[in-house]
Length: 228
Image 1: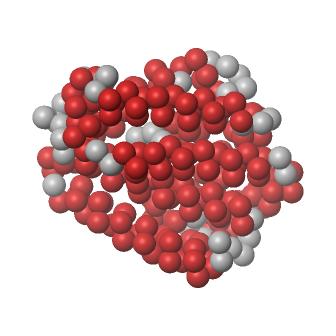
Image 2: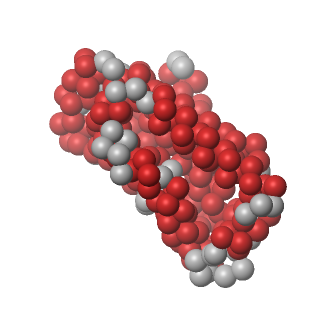
């Protein structure tokens, strides 16, 4: 993706991010429901991937997946850094690393949009049970966006996996640590380092990414089918 296309993409994502963030910040009820939803999803994800997390090969990648890509962690500071970082980071990060950052930002924007729509369908600000979550999920709809959400996880994982097989990329990321933190982009830098280290330990991410894709798509299909 060239510089201008990347800028247009980031600008569009920034607009979407500010819109949904404003909804959350100006609606206390929505914010409370989103926190309850995040609690539910955190528990669900931990249970879904507990078996992989227990395996030494997969543990760091599962932690990265849950904390940095798909979990309920507050990523607002990382988001702000993405919005102002792209042009500057081009000077000292590999193109694939920048693409991974941009896709991670897209994933997070889409996730909070879907979470906001789902939270609006919850009956209260208490953590939902499985039936309550399933009902809210179906009411929120947006199956094509749900599908894209899962696809983005695979795309980001594949990019990080490709980087992990190139020692020179690891060196470039490490050398960027000082400049990135000095420039105020520390969370972005830490994200890349955690991702690089986790996927390097995997020594091939195909099985891991296939497990995520299969489990998340199976859950999505059950929920939309009304199977809970």
